[in-house]
Image (cartoon, rainbow over all chains, first blue to last red; front, side, top):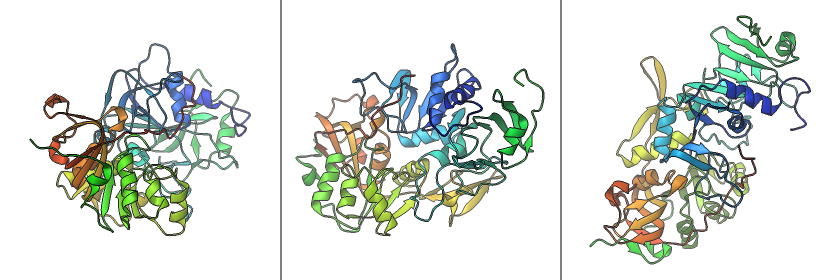
Length: 225
Length: 233
């Protein structure tokens, strides 16, 4: 738990759990570094996902037990992981063939900004002295079939992260399919941001107020409202 | 029978270095880096280097060692955020960076080693990465032209080699190494174990000997960049 979370809506863990619910059984999935990594903890019982990490492992398992790590078995966040039965190792060109070639079903990424047409900015605040360093994010958004974003709805300063158009340097154009925040699940549609689900105790007006673009109401009633 | 084995990392570099050259290095973070060849490069004093590598090491290990001694003029990398000396030199305009997404870097090395001077990719379209590059539409979708990379010298880390130079990597330490090996006009491999030629099952070789010119056996420290602190899933 961090002190920056809103007092209403979902916690980071609940956000990750909400994303996990929407990942179909048998999907090949790449989880970004940070909050997206939490998603693996909440995969519903009986559902099997195959995790890809872009430094060259398909079939990634959880962190090793203390003392059992291997310095040559790491994930893209450079942390030690394990390999599950059926896993494979490969070089970077093959790894990005899986990504760019459209073979991965889903990628979950963090965001600095998402625009209403699905543009994503998630690698730089664009300061003049910022070191350009994007890793694999531009390749992931260019090639993976579905891109989910998991992020706090607003910055620590209260600025909306869902905006009409991004002001930070872009990672990709029209790439985001869904956004999971502490307040709501929001789809990116040809008409713009469309509410899919509200976090418990959160109403439409609250989400609209904290969103920097027009929000369309939920398309059809669901039992969650 | 062909024997590409050299006694030490310095011996393996002998005659291959000149100031201003371009060197590609395998590794992701500190995993699978040719750590002893990097130390030998530092000790050689060769300078004004252009280095192609996904990362730039940390301050006191990996390619960070060559930054400390100011032997690097330019880096072609995808992610260099974990090195304070890199940041200092970059902000003082002492070090140039050619910003390249990770998958594009991998493919540029693969293409260079495969004799392909350029290729089109969707990665980076509409972003800073595309600035100044040719854009072409295929089937109604825009792609950007990226260039293959061929380097003067490739340095890689493998798990095992035979005396002919066939290489086998281990787990995620493979990463960029096979691509880097093929991108070099010359390629040096540092390995943990040397076996007699003919010991490997030909089905299991990752980098065939034709891509490797010299081999040296070293003892690897295999430093860990990030200690795992996340809970078990």
